[in-house]
Length: 262
Image (cartoon, rainbow, N blue to C red; front, side, top):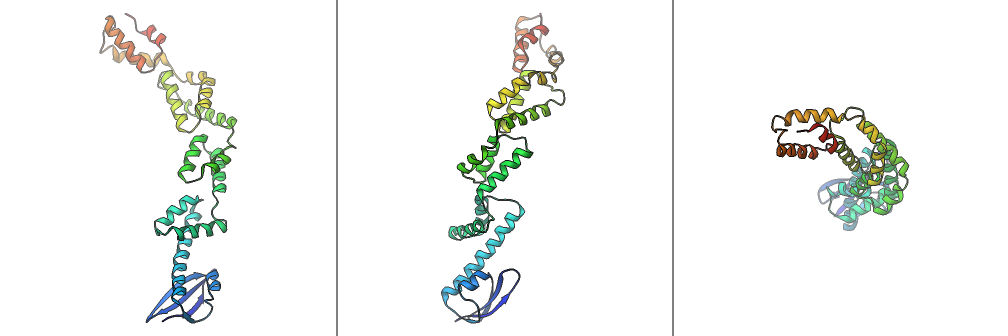
């Protein structure tokens, strides 16, 4: 026989139930709504089904509390919470029940999550829309939600951010020839998630700013000091190898010709 021996009110809307199963006393902490729903209001005999409900509710409540702590640490997507709960329980029906409860209580909302995440990235980070989209996909946000919210990231704002990144990269002297510096900067901007159209247009608009940070003549002279130790510049074949080596490093052909003479 299974008997509900005692019901004790605890903090919040939870109750401690003491259940005698054969000769052992078991304790379960469950929520008030379960107490009311199944009339666990006073000591009485429990059916096997009621006993299983209490045990199941304890597990669900514990996982719900764990999910709340996980969300309280920082905002989470539905997918993130599901994965977190999946570490403790494999029953998808229990996980889905907890997710629905979190959603109905206003703790989970992927649309709000995406909107907040996008606004924070636009306001505080130098990243493009592709970077944001990829991060949200990894967090399990549906494509439709991402695209519906990412529309606020206007191209004008993207140009502003790319310009800020270009300024940041040109604060100091660049120790690369222009072509190499251009490609390096372009790759950094691609990695930041901006479109090629915005990147190319921004780089072309700021050619002078980039070139001001590069002393290509000084750089090529340093290269030539080392190359002269290896090659005879009066020899046509050696001179061709020097020109090829400098071209591979991104130096302009006309600049190379000015410095590499037989």
